[in-house]
Length: 146
Image 1: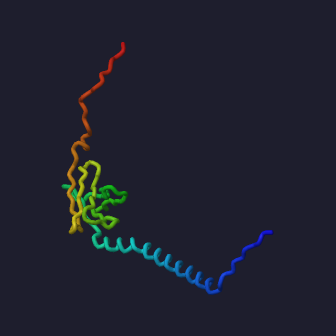
Image 2: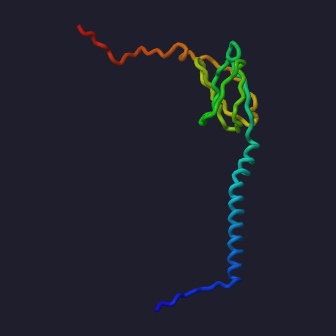
Image 3: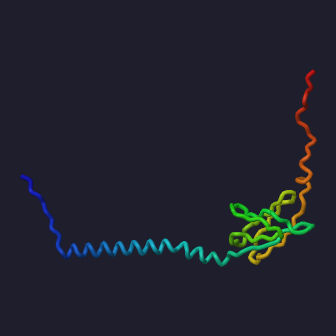
């Protein structure tokens, strides 16, 4: 005959286990909350170094509308309005590089410094792009069939 072992818990022990579970649950929630908010504080400290950059792009004849202004190594940018003015849509920090490009003009890069808030840029024409690449060297000669 098999005997069944039954274990009865002391009511005091059951109460202590219940309190312990609540304490452990509260500590887990508190730790999760602290760890989850830590990156927010780290980003807010860095926000002091970020600022908005505006500017005007022109050539020898005046403002250039439609110049592409992009952040190097990122997928964000804007273009100049009909007065050649732009406001970059993302806050920048020192060390970021803005790339200015426009068909027929040399692409220029400007490294953002700590005091850079307004950029006035004069683009110069790119003669190679305007004239087109000329290649006089012909590596292959064609033969005419008779």
